[in-house]
Amino acid sequence: MENLVRSDERLDDLQINGYKIIQHPDKFCFGMDAVLLSSFARVKEGEVALDLGTGTGILPILLEAKTEGAHFTGLEIQPESVEMAGRSVAYNNLQSKIDIIEGDIKEASKIFGKATMDIVTSNPPYMTNHHGLKNPNDAKAIARHELLCSLEDVVRETSAVLKQMGRCYFVHRPFRLVEIITLMKQYKLEPKRMRLVYPYIDKEPNMVLIEGVKGGGSQLTVEKPLIVYNAPGEYTQEIYEIYGMLMQ
Image (cartoon, rainbow, N blue to C red; front, side, top):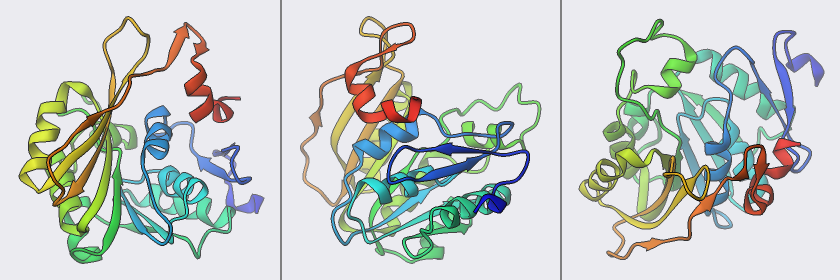
């Protein structure tokens, strides 16, 4: 299996099911937001899930480990990321459970068909401001800024591929929460659960996790805040429970 990992890449232990993931240290690597989303998302036995903008493939791999879902697909537009994520899937012998597909989020419903998925997850680009980007084609820039797709593209295609009463799970920035909820309502994705993530108990939140149900009724549950740090370098117990083993 080691020949699947190139000399300029690293192999990170996910500390779950013996799984590992291939990453390139100079390109975009997964962060805490993806791991928190994998714990917030609920995939039931037999369900099929799609991750839009899968990057390294971290969400399909973690969801396969944590849930009883039947099949997981990651859609990614950057060929290098698709190829690397595919090698991570092969390294973990998950080819029968996970597909990594090269394609544009804006074309997701054409690629997979409408109303074909039980679950959609996405950790989309957070930033709309493109100014000051030295290289708009850089993998990190594409992952962080809405260069190749907008938030509306993500929400629209999520709604299109979801079955009626299918569920979606997003992680994003709180400063765009009004826009997120407005778009979800516009595309018939009723917000059902929301959780704000705070770096410290006395700081403003810097992440929001949100669940929507296609065609669901109007009732939103706001879960208790998730605090990341007790003090600098000291994670809270809940973060250790969700994510601690990945930080050893």
